[in-house]
Image 1 (cartoon, rainbow, N blue to C red):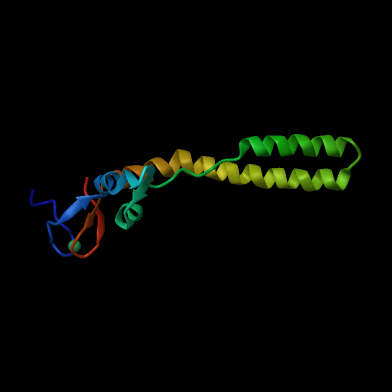
Image 2: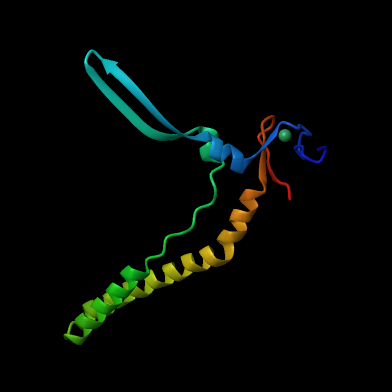
Length: 133
Ligand SMILES: [Zn+2]
């Protein structure tokens, strides 16, 4: 177990981010009774630490909006609305570009980031975050 320690301060008081995240996100339910009335509140809460070690998120793509907008642009353009058609077309292109970038991130970078996250630990003594494979 000697290799499982913080590379910065040498403390063995380290924990896997994934474990902190899963154990720090808790579902709670509490019932309050007032006379004959009873109210139940339910929810999910994350500790600050759990939020700090949350896994990377995939980026949103808006392909549907791009297609709809491009279609709309073509219709407007074909209907004689040259300028509005071109403007809509340009917006569709930009949206398509950002979706392509997000898609690229999700396919190429996100799996690596997620893999890194799965192997990352945090030191409870100095707060250092590091990877152990
Ligand atoms: Zn440390």
